[in-house]
Length: 295
Image 1 (tube, rainbow, N blue to C red):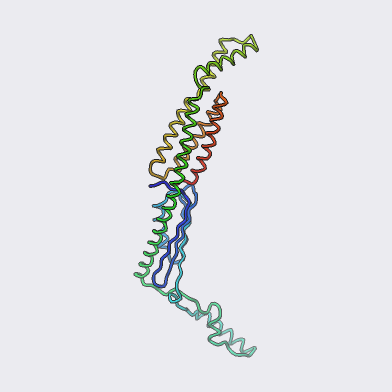
Image 2: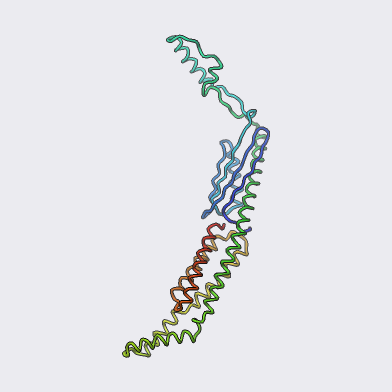
């Protein structure tokens, strides 16, 4: 399955004899798949098929689906509400006895609300099945158009994500190769710190100071975090090169990116490394924002 975004819109329409219909599909971001299908009364069988079709095509997103059906005048028949007519005429006769006047004409009775209603002409079972089949075919067209639109946007988002992952990898390499992380630089910095402490207070145990400095140096080592970042960068590239959907997996990696970056910034004993780490954190935040729209 090609990578998809979770936003899109599609529309399709069709007709059969005196009946025409329009499908509209709207998709936005969602943590899971939320299908909201609205069809007119009498089309429940179509709704069931629609849910089955859409569940196979989409894995994530809030998808709103609506079916609007329009019938021509010849597809409906007038139906007289005889109970309403009887009640009206009974009331009219009673009023005539007490107040006089003429009884309402047939045209006047028919013009009264609720007396005549339009009802759909009954369709035989075979005709209904044929109509529903055509309506479902129209839905398939709209659903596939929505897939294409989401895929098109997914390709664009994936390219942005690849660029951001590449940038994270470059920043990781910059930190790994930074001069402040060379053994000589670390040794010089620790020696300077120890000398300052001894100079400030001659009662310090020099040997103990060097032991504590060695412990601090070990705690400040960034190699473990840098190695994990490198693995996460490779995993993210593999996911983007594989079949979708991968949004949830990439979101997990984004959290791991952020965790390692925060640790690097907190452990860093170099202003330059900290600055690179903050640049990386900005890219990671942008990466996570883009992921919100990836299936």
